Length: 195
Image 1: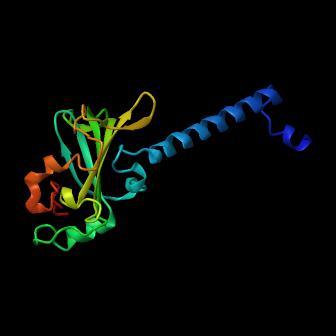
Image 2 (image 1 turned 30 degrees about the horizontal axis):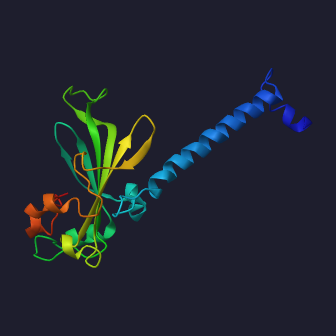
Image 3 (image 1 turned 60 degrees about the vertical axis):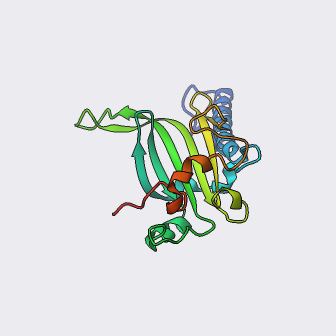
């Protein structure tokens, strides 16, 4: 103990130090639980968030912006390789295992950019997913969809519902009706832009 005493800040009691260390550990534990919680979510009768674990590290595919949302679209390596091979423009479908994530934020003005019209991602709104699996989703163009809303106040996700935008029914086919207008592109709106 005498070796540790010289490391203590003068005037800081052992109880106070224990309280600070305990609070820090509790905070770290809570953050770990919050991050893990999203992977326990599943759309009732549909896709699980855990099917897309690691999406945060996928390659950026494209971006999009509306008045209500700024989005970053990511794709897993299977899908990126298919795009590079010419899918869907070559008339071939994406292979099973292709996955996309679309992260939506509210648009916000940049506080730092010299151009005052510069928009950047603001508050996280939701994360949407697509997966191609011809066995599971043969009746919805071979794709399954899911949307998960983000609550900034609690730092948690919940499955979207039919009242949300995009509407999420209790299955993995929520995006099928919307995506039928791009059936010729294997039900995928997002193109692989020149880089």
